[in-house]
Structures are given as structure tokens and as C-alpha cells.
Image (cartoon, rainbow, N blue to C red; front, side, top):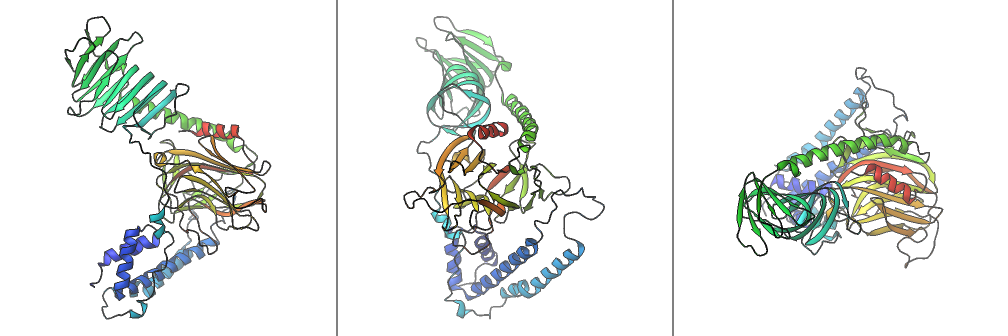
Length: 566
């Protein structure tokens, strides 16, 4: 066969090395390597470079990554003593990279142009199994709702539903249904492209992607296309948009008002009066039972606009951020708080994650980018690349433990998606992650068993992608249980002695004392060879993380959620 395109083969090898390759692309790479000796030689040289560089970084950073002082002094920017490589270290690294370039990379470059090189002896060598590549096709993903939504909740401010009504969240898809809102502001984006903003005491019946019924309260409709003919129904009239912006209010005496802010609305009173009326910009109408139609002047100020909505959201976000800041003193004063990262900027070292608990257990950012957190003024750490992580070290042993995190998951990329994983997995070590199916997964290593697993149901779904969630897992040594919480609510309670595999084993050796040691947020670097999937990087963001040396109770966890909810 003809030699593969250089750039294409390089891209395939990069995807394979980083664990991003799909099943189809993996088959493509295998076909190339099977049929082309030159490509096989490129493969070998590529991974010699990849392995050498990874081992080099691992060796150089292993000794120094936790050498930061517990209370780092302020750094004088003019003193040349920032937390970076010194000149001798930098010179050494540059020299070493040059050596690697000359000995390994340049021969690799020559391979592309040396058509006489043969690697027939490599033809029978199978492609080594990738760490996660082939698992892409067998990921167990969250269940997909069988009901197609007709509208999406795109924005909410201070929404309170009536008792008995299901809780709604931003990003949630809504099928045909009726709901009642006691107060607040909500924007619904229909799949037809129409947006409806409702405010206050509202009862709304969603009928289709192009039709809804307002039973009580007021709504403002943004309908960009005159061809769609979005229909809003009340008890005594039907309003049909013709590419417009209008508001409708239903009063307690069954009287309805329509206000046209832009474009045209056709009004079909009912019953008994089938004569359609057309209203244009600036005009309005009152429709009431057993009373003649009455034209009025449209009042734009009486209905919430998108601009007003955005202003309210910004004001509320800033207020909640300030409230959260004020609450941190109460959180950090807890004597059982072992680690507390709020990811607020460090003026002296942007790579440092300051531990606000007072324990001095600062973390180190590796590869991650800074991003927006729960509020525009809040900073988060974003995990995207396969090597992004936060390194940390937590000494000591614990009889109970609580792990808490504010996390935004952006995709189910791996079978296991790291929240916090210890490097080692020896007696008492803790692994905390989210599975691709949406399960919250706590794994603990007993002394004489491989592991013990404490799984929730599939509680995180596609509708949760991109939204901030508060996840808490409690290991309660006194009560003998592991409990998972999502957004302040208990979702799982599992016996410590057996984990979820109660049918496969009886009570066995103790998991206590618990320990963490060296660990990572958002990724995993196992210290020993393992058959488990090795790439577990999180696709998402974290903007608050805490470890407690006791089991927090339900009330405390609800309080933490209330303090931090977006």
C-alpha cells in the first residue's frame, strides 16, 4: 500500500497516546501498521519519545512537587525567586531536551524520507493494548429519556415551585406537561426557537414545541419567525404570533390582556366570537367573558424582558458570590477540616492551590487552565487534557472521612472520571470518581481484599452536563456506612462491611483506618502496574473541594449545599 499521509499518521498516534482515539480510528491505525513497515517503524520511535519524556517529567517532579512550605512566604517579583525552575535547572532541562531531540526525534524525522528502511521483522508484532482507547465503544452511558422534550429551561432566578411540583433546573428538558410556579423568573426555550419568559405566580401548560396554554400569571413571548405561528392559549382567547414579541397576562377574574411590543399578533376570541383581530406594535387588547373587546396601549414595562432577566441574573450571581465569600470563615473554622481548596487566585503563585484549612496541604496545578466557576467572579480549575490534574498530599490516618466537591461535568469521556484518586491503592486508600453511567463511585482498599466498592444508582445524566453539582461522600466509621449525597440530598447508603457486592461476599476485613497520602484531583497516576483503566481524567471543572476527618451529618451537608448553590 502507499505510505500514509504523514500528518494523518501523526494525528492517529497522538490520539492513541492520549487516550482520545475512537474505535473506528483505532481500526484505521491498526490497518496502517499491519500493512506498512515504514509506519510501524514510526510507531516504535514515536512511543520511545513519548515514554522517555513522560518518565523524565515524572522523575524530575516526584521529589519536588510537595516541597512547598506549609506557609509560603510572599515572593518579591524582583528577587527572581518565584516558584519556577532556577537557571541551572532550566539549563539542564534545555540541554536534556536537545539531547533527546538529537538522539530520538531527529531519527524519527528521517524515517519519513528514508524509503529504504524496512521493518518486516515487526510485521507480526501486535499493537499494544491502549489504556482506554478500545473502551470507548463499550462505555456504559447514562440512560437517555425516551420522551423528546418540547422546551428547555434555559434560565431561572429565585424560582419557587408550589408544594408537590417537581423541582426544575437549568438545562432540563420538559415534555408536554403542566406546572405551577409560586414565584421567580424562568425562561423556557421551545425547540421551535421561540422563547417564553414567565414571572411570579404562574400556571403553564406545555402542549407542543409550538403551543402552550397560560392558565394564570403573565408571560412574554419572543417569536423570531413569522412562519412558525407560535400559539399561546388562554381560557377566553387564542394569540397567534406573526414574527413578534408580545406579552400576555391572565388575571384572577378570567380576564386576559395582550400587549404587542413588536410585530403583529392575531387574536382569536372564544367562544362565540370567531372574528380574528390583528394587533400591531404598541397596541393591546383586553378580553373578558361577557364583555366587549377593549383595545389598550401596550405596556412594555409591565413584562420582564431578556435584558431585565440578564440584569437580575448578574445581580443575583454577584450577591451569592459575596454571600459565599462571607460564609467561608465558618467553614474553615471547623476543627475537623483537613483540606479546603476554594481555588481563589493566589497572588504569588498561579500554580499553587492554597489550602485554606490551616493544615498547609497546598496543591499543585499541572496542565489545567483557569476558568469561570459557579459565578462570574468565582475562579475554577478546568480539566480537559489527559494530563491535567492537581497534585496533593494528605498525611495521616482517619476513622471516618467526608469528601465534598463542587464540580461541573462536561462529558462522560471515560469509564471512570476522577474526582480524587490516591496514587497508591493499599490498605485504607480511597478512590472517589464518577462512572460513565452516572454512578457515584467510592472505592476503598481493605487489608486482605482487592477492593470494596460503594456505588450509587445512575444519578448523573446527560441533563446534568454543564451544570454545577455538589457531590458529597461520607465514610462513617461509627455507623458503619458509606453515604453519597447530590445537591444536599442523600442518594445512596451502603454498609461499610460489604459494599454493593453484598450478594458476593459476607462481612470481611476492616477498611479502617482510612488514608490518602499522595493523590490527585481530576486524574490518576497509579504508582504500580494495574489492569484497571489508567486514564481517568475528568472532563469538567472544580471550584471547591474539602476533606473532613469526621462523618458530616445530613443537616451539615444540606447547609454546605445552601451556602454554595449557584
